[in-house]
Length: 449
Ligand code: PLP
Image (cartoon, rainbow, N blue to C red):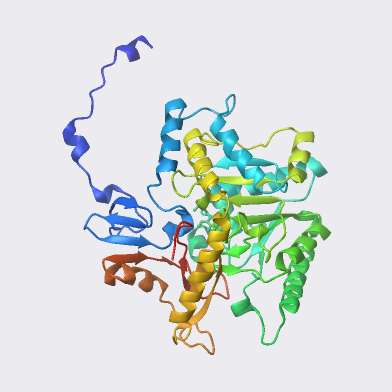
């Protein structure tokens, strides 16, 4: 200790600090340099080369309040003045408590606790572990429940548990031997490609419910922890809302087999669809047992995600070990919680959700008027300010047109309406089986006409 105290550490020289090697970053691609953003304001990103981008997607549906919001920045600074970080074994912060209270209150009693983590993938891991723990405590350690059923066209995150849950072939490919075999998948609710000709919504839902029921029977209902699905499918299919009655039907199948229903609202949640939670929209209208949220939770001001937990699960854990067997160094991080609480207070302001629905309807109308007739447009869909445009080679047979990446990078290069360029989010494509190619639009909730 004495030696360490006496040790003199050379301060980094100015020269070292000045050396910025853009290639030092492990970007998504090692071959190309992404555009460098040097500033931002509201809807716009400012690039180093002087260009200004209308950020029409806020990254992957993240920046729900746009950029550089003074209220959120102040909340971060105020929290920094109090405390930036506390270890959660012994300590809590008012920022964490305020955020979790807001989140629980927004569910009108459907959820009673929030576990705050740093990414959607971590929320997925927490959901899987909590579901398993629920059954260990409910049925005893000998419980057979360890399996999950998700959907073929799905993405739930990039860590090994979350990756195993999703059906993203390209992202899974080289890790396949490391992924849990305890996960199987059924068809998603994807009316544009999944519904047969002349089939009613009701008949389609019945068919999908029967498929899920058959999957429970195939793998053994006593072995399944939960069915996991997105109420509005984001990156895997391109803003695909479920047809009316779908979630209620899935809930009934889960209840029949004593399994939990987990909603992944990492992309579609926190106001994106014009309802605070996508499951609260009239289309879905079915509360899950566990709910993953992220992205719009903090609007990108800090890396924050969460698992919302229903009283049904909380009660079992409380009566059992009284703890969630899962902990992370940065869980409920004070700065993250302060940023997310500030974002949520703005989102929860009266009329905000109504505004999102109104702007969403205007966006859909504009897209339809300008694009619906084009030969390469298969479908325009979504909910609230969460819209997808699916490209096809031919409208009649819906042959997917693999063009989304070129479209998204093309608008960067060509520009749509100088001096403003627009950024789009391309489909992450390669999911198992039936799927198309699309771009997403997810502008901030603060947009106006
Ligand atoms: N779930 C869904 C529906 C997502 O869209 C994503 C990310 O795109 C995730 C989970 C994973 O979230 P993250 O990238 O924050 O780990």
